[in-house]
Each structure stands twice: as C-alpha cells, then as structure tokens.
Image 1 (cartoon, rainbow, N blue to C red):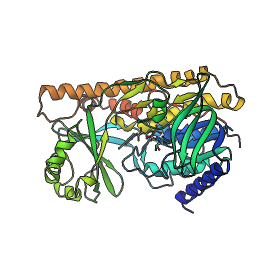
Image 2: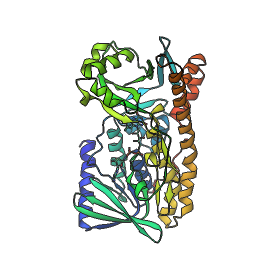
Image 3: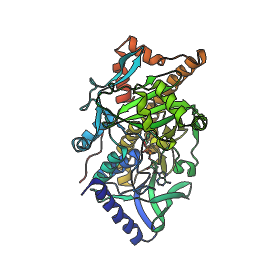
Image 4: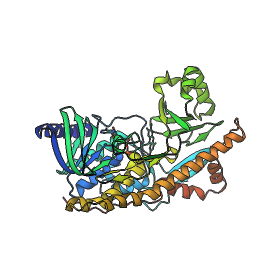
Length: 426
Ligand SMILES: Cc1cc2nc3c(=O)[nH]c(=O)nc-3n(C[C@H](O)[C@H](O)[C@H](O)COP(=O)(O)OP(=O)(O)OC[C@H]3O[C@@H](n4cnc5c(N)ncnc54)[C@H](O)[C@@H]3O)c2cc1C
C-alpha cells in the first residue's frame, strides 16, 4: 500500500465516521488546516493522549512549489519523535550548504555542517510527501481524526468564548464542539478572520515566479540566490530538476505576461546560471507559478477558545525558506504547552498566552531580519537601478566566511529551536 492509499483509507474512515455521527462531533481540540503546522500539532497532541480532530478543505496534499524545505530543526524534531529515519527513506535531496554567486565566484552563504543536530542539512522533499507521512503517523493513534474535503466556514461563540466551528464536508454540514480551536489554515486564514484577530502587515513589495527547469549532468553546482541586475534568481537542486525562483516587483507580473513568453525567457536567461536554451522548457505562462511575498503577523494570536499558529499567525517572506520551519516550531511549542491542560480539562487563557509568548519572539526576530534584508536591497536599487550585484549581507559573508556559520544557524535552527516534551502515551 502506498502512502497516499494509506492516508486515503484513513480519510474515508473519517468521512463515514462524521456521517455516522450525523452533523455534530466532539473533540478536545479541533485544528483547522492540515498543513505542516496543523498536522505536526495534531500528531503531537494525539501522541500525548489528546482527542484531536484535524480539518482540511482539500482532498489531498498535492501542491506544487510550496515550502518543500525540511530544515535541520524540523529533522531534529522528527528524531525526537522517533520518525526521522523513516522520513528520510522518502525521496529527497540534501543541501549541507547554500551558495551564491559573488563577482563570478561561487561562495557559501549558509553552512549547516557544524550545527548541533543529528542531521546537518536541509532536506528538499515535496511538501505532499512530508504531509502524507505526518498524516499516516498520526492516524496510528485512535484519538486522532482527520477530516479531508471539509471546509471550515464559521465559528460558534458562546459566552464570549469560541466553543466550536461549522464546516461543510462531502457529507453535508458539520459542527465540531471543542475546548480549543487552532487556526493552522495558512496565510489566508479564515479562522483568524472569523475570530476577528487583527493583522499587522509589513508590506508585500515583491513576488516570486516559480518554474521548473530540467537538471542535466553537466550543469553548474547548486547555486542559491544568483543575483542579477535588480532582480534575484534562485535555483534549488531538486534532483532531476531545478526549482527556479525569479523575483519581480509586486504588480509587474501582468506587464511581464503582456510582453510575451519570449521576452520573459530572455529576462530570465539574463540572470540564470543555466544555459539559455534550457528556458525553452518554459512553453507558456502556465509553466510559471506566482507567489505573492507577504510579511505580516497577528497583533494577538489568540482569544478565549482559539489560537492561531504557523502562517495563520505570521506570513513570512521566502528569504531563507523558513515558513515551514517556523510553522513546525509553533506546533511543537503549542503541543508542549497545551497537551496537559487539554487532557485534564484545565485549559485557560494563560496557556494560550504562553504559546504566543514562546513563539512571538522568534517570529518577530525572523521578520525583522527579513525586513532588514529587504530594505538593504531597496537602498541598493534606489542608488543605481541598473546595478548588478548581490545584497549587502551576501557581500558581507563573502568577506567574512565565518558569517556563513551564523547564517546556517539562523536558517537551519532559527532563533528559538523547540524540542519535543510530550511523552508518547500509547
Ligand atoms: C509558492 C510557495 C512557495 C513556498 N516556498 C517555501 C519554501 O521553499 N520554504 C519554506 O519554508 N516555505 C515556503 N513557503 C511557505 C510555506 O509553504 C508556508 O510557510 C508553510 O506551508 C506554512 O505552513 P502552515 O501549516 O502554517 O500553513 P499551510 O501550509 O498554508 O497550510 C494551511 C492548510 O489549511 C487548509 N485550509 C485553509 N483554509 C481552510 C478552511 N477554511 N478549512 C479547512 N482547511 C483550510 C489549506 O488547504 C492548507 O492545507 C512557500 C509558500 C508558497 C505559497
């Protein structure tokens, strides 16, 4: 049985379970969204003996060009859960260092090889494989329930407290009554909107155009952040293909499309380290996927009966590819803090505030760093619109290679790495 079939079977069981139970189910905790944050939290709560339901609007985990990076800190968490060896049997590529081209030379901008973790590399793995894996592991616990194809549409409020949610599933409408709802439903979170949580936005100046180009034996070594005239170009080694990201100013994609695919290929060829003929693989704009870069966070992550984590609490810039990592770290911290009170029925606002206090600092510090790097690029652009060259931090690392270790730590582990404190209650 493949992983997909395995998870699919669990899904069907849960759908019929929801149908059998008519329109209402009860759970100690309901998590909205089966992304990295939601599934990791669901797995850890289930492991700790909490009755948990994860609700996902899609029927599978297939998404192209999502966060496909599993950082050393996430691998460490998987080790602490006893799952890393199995996970790393799935197809993946490993990056022990990240590189950039500076003045025609390939330099190391982040080095993970000295980190105090069991695995000292970033594993690149399709996000759906990682999510399938987490879902399959979680469904081993009888107190874990996964409702796929179930779209959360409303919250139930009683006595100034969120007491449940409403959703629409393939079997009709559904109500979930619960002590806690966790919004792990991503950057366009409906949960945070319905709960009226206020979002602080730090702008969205750029967009990334993602595309795939084939990987051939004589291609240059992996290059990350190849900087061109005013625009960055990122290539990530995905084994049989290169995942390429071309960074453009916000709102310019429509103009680029209007210029036609040949002009687009020429723009990309000018900054790409790959041979220009390779761009012929981009047949049309259907082969190009747009990611709007956004940095925001909630002013307060919770209200009585509800908390948001992951992208729902804070959308990150793609700089450093830390979105999945932070989502996982939020989930681990939330599980560490919430498992015991959820099990004993002693959950209070102070526990929700504790999750925010624990994860607020690393979120703010990472976003601050991303904003500083962005303003550095802006200043450079303002000085000379046509100037080619890498951003200041990359030039700094080229001068003082020791900084590549610091960058490796910040990207690989983040500001506050979390560790699994929840015991397996099986
Ligand atoms: C194109 C792209 C490329 C990216 N590249 C990287 C990268 O290289 N590295 C990196 O670390 N990060 C990357 N990111 C960011 C990364 O994917 C996110 O930071 C990460 O997935 C956040 O995890 P999450 O669990 O918080 O939310 P998500 O992964 O967004 O998961 C949210 C889940 O909630 C579900 N959902 C939403 N609404 C509802 C609803 N009403 N009812 C039920 N379910 C719902 C969604 O279907 C989804 O499955 C990228 C993002 C995009 C869009």
